[in-house]
Length: 334
Image 1: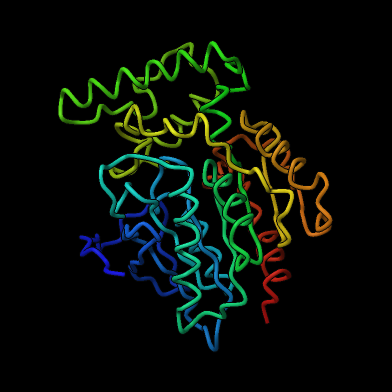
Image 2 (image 1 turned 30 degrees about the vertical axis):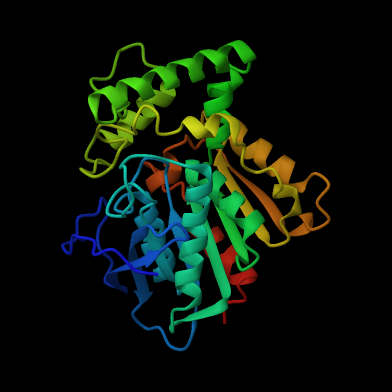
């Protein structure tokens, strides 16, 4: 598997402060489709022996310099070797054309991260977990349903990207007519892109923010468009995905076999998040009829909105103590 020669930024350009408790470096690895992925690796400075490891990704349309890196660095402070990676077609990772998404390829990205960690000399290959944030929470559960090497999974403030693309927010467009209209528009855009020789971008988080914007749009703006979370490589902070970037999500549902996951899964969500229904339904579907449901958990964080679990918000909403406890238990951290 030949890795592409990616141009990686070496200076610290994260949206969070650098920790003095961990060592940091850039790494790359290749997925099953031959796409080279870029990641930040965080290793505890006092590490010895083979470590339990965690791969982190998300949110959908974000980059590793934002909240996935914060999660990864914080968990490394707590004794885990971690990586935060950019998914295919985005950030510093490879893949052409840019700014595309795929339920299959993006699930594979997590599995490729597990490949990388499994073969790392510092990692105990029997002690690997993953964290998916927002849209990557759904991808993380999907990966756990497919990859038996994953021993523990956390889905934080998750989206099911196939559901929201096929049914709209809050399932408000769950009809054959609405899906037909969406597919017709996508197909028309494909022809325009072919004529123009380039893909039209969909636009990231709206800016300027309309006064009558719904709360969840204001919530995203507060993170992606301000100093709190803005990053120049983030799709959500800038011009967004290609308009046709998520077309295949409409008729390729993920989480089909989530109720067959044997490994441990923690779904955590704020009860004030607009996306709360994704987490609740994903958890219920995962445990329904699953004879391995005893190691599945749903953690509801009272008062937290969607982006509070990106960076903690104003009140430190991310339950890192719980994450450490969950992974320590299920990865048998010594």
